[in-house]
Image 1 (cartoon, rainbow over the protein chains, first blue to last red):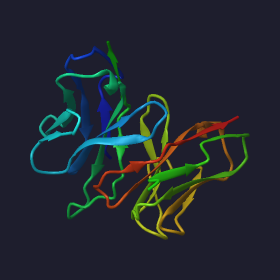
Image 2: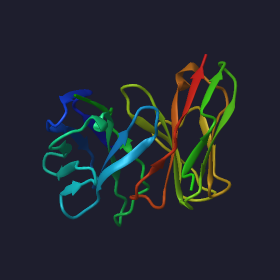
Image 3: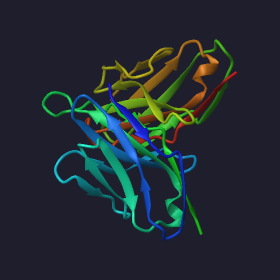
Length: 118
Length: 112
């Protein structure tokens, strides 16, 4: 069975500072990796995903994550955060079926609350 | 397009009562999912469906049943609610398994 661990439950940072949210996973098969963001009282929105190819993936609002197979990690980074980045961030994985398909059964980490202070 | 909608937004039940949560999507997605979110535990998959007329168990299916009679709707039922089912329930849909999942706004359920 797969599992996901987000190493920090809360990360406070100042505006324009860099940030890294850590995510480690375990699985006995190939996985697909995702970061979702949840703003207060809303559903989750996809931030970025790794399916295959380049191990560095980027989002449209400046976040990036790197898939490290040897360390089974998928850490999320942003070089300069804004107040509007304050939210809860979830790392998630889904296992690949034979042939590379997936049912999309996501296993989520516990979440990391990012708070950006002025 | 409304995307993914959930009905109701809030509900309070007494132990032993039953209810049905409705999820509707207007994106013609094949896959639909029900998750529950509890503090400090992230989201956990309850049941999912890979197409009209199909359902399958997720990580925490006990105490819940689901139906997917129409492609656009995915119903989650609680036959006899328990306080342990107090949670926020999210529905999601995607066009295929590795695609982005689109989430609804959630239903906050309290069981007394």
